[in-house]
Length: 152
Image (cartoon, rainbow, N blue to C red; front, side):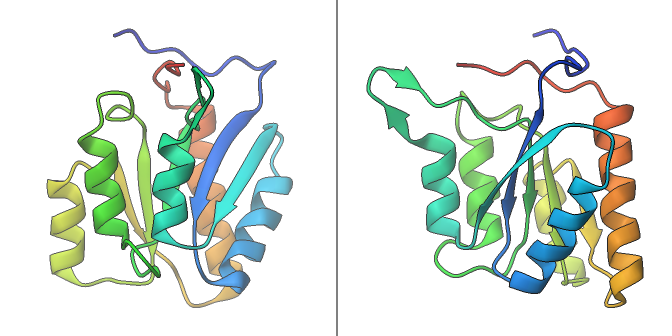
């Protein structure tokens, strides 16, 4: 499978799986402030995340996002279960997943990397630092990384 930079004429689609409304607002603001055109889809629990990634519309598969920002502590399926579902799916296994969570527990970090998360970022508690981290993640993943092609 070849990789490509995201075409500049297409918005980057992000699935944000986050149950904290304050964190969602901070991420939305950070996304809006970037020069990259993005579409942010937000789900606030693990069950809806799996549905958003796997639902079908008639005979046409819903196109997956370009990247997933995943919290671990979620209602329903937790972030570990979502990551496992993504990596066990033939259609989704190459989807970049960045764990963005408040947990700095070594078991969570090791478990996510064992499950092939692309990155693990601990959310800072300071609002300005949190915004800076989100902007840094975006700059790296949208300006420098070649994303895999979307499967339809």
